[in-house]
Length: 602
Ligand code: GDP
Image 1 (cartoon, rainbow, N blue to C red):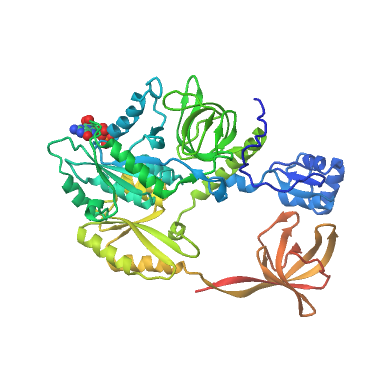
Image 2: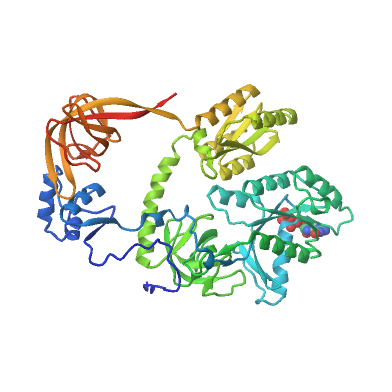
């Protein structure tokens, strides 16, 4: 595969560090062996093996060495150590790149259409798309790639063309928020139905503005006033009634009112001032992906920032890709995709998942290294995900110190649901807020689980029991469902959980003492002390005081705590250990280390 030339016209996605020219640096790789290390420090393997032996590590040349050991040896030979790549880039799905205001330009909105089944979502998407095909933008043979863009009088709008909130909530559950605006389709002859209500809740939980399309206006049974009146009950007060919810009467089938709808989408998007920086390497989200017997793995990528180009090297989720081709839903080929554009790409190593994030890197080598490391991280995260969750895991950090807990209520009657809502809203704990994102009657549904998954919410079931299949899904997805029969218990539990969150008070507790029996000076590392724990125990995270004849001469933390060559968490009375003190080297034989920990005061 051809190596991509460095593209100087786009800003890199990795924060750039200073020039390393001339510096002596060992690049640490997770699978580094003793002989790799010897090569890196430009020394014969035997010399490195001897050095390791001197710090208590018996190793042969093929043995993998950990980062700390590499650091110790490297420093000793006068080298600095750096990780293989800048670690921030590994977590690209979490970080937001702050582009300077002057580099930002407007980008088109990304719109999702939601609503109850049969209210006309697919018809609307087809009508909007065919108006563009009819305009002769291409040959007219379309393919479903998960998104398409129209040009409405010079204003581009991207539509996600998987209607409904199942895909929307699944994306959110994977941490992807790609929608700027939701069009809620409500059939004028049917009014708000259960999935309309769910769609409203999903859009709200995602903090997406809603435009209502009152559809099927061509039907003689259409009753738009009834729809507007129902909307008001969901706090979507139509503009005509003095509120700020845009409601557009349309017929998706006949195409009437659709232009008006698009105008309103334009209006609302312009108010949102959506922006991106086209002059950087691209990043964004996978909308759909699959395997084609001719093309191999493919994916539809929505570019959210930067510009994506053919032959770019990128990481999608945790797989490497080198873009071979890009095309849109009209089979039109592109060499570039700009912010808010969606393109189907080929050249992937494997099939990613919808909702995966992608990011472009400068070189193939860089992208491959990041992909490999992300694979390893994800394995570790999968293990972490198997850990049972508790309420604390559900709190969302909002600005500053404020935290928020999302709650879904399901109760046996409207009366008890409202009573619960009222009581929960009265709980008043500083810096924590409760956000009831759904409050419904009846048993816990699959959609409750989807909403909870996407919004990190706790589900409270009051005098209801989930069906076995829902229970099973909740278990696999690790969604917290709590069942109660008494309102008082709910309030108590939630209040306790909220209070448990308040920053705990800590106080110091001495855990043990160790006597220094030997010291070793290692250049560039400092002093390593051989000690004997005379009392209690010492932990590697302990706060320590170094005492010389009963006088405190230093306070700080341990840098290392070892038994023989192994790092350990704790050493008990009667055992020997090796320690070094973070930032302090003047340790003498006969000194005593007093170790303590900070304990939470209940
Ligand atoms: P979805 O389930 O929300 O995607 O709904 P569809 O788009 O599949 O539409 C369901 C049915 O309603 C189909 O038979 C459509 O032809 C019909 N339909 C959709 N929009 C309109 C409309 O504006 N007027 C009329 N009369 N029928 C419509």
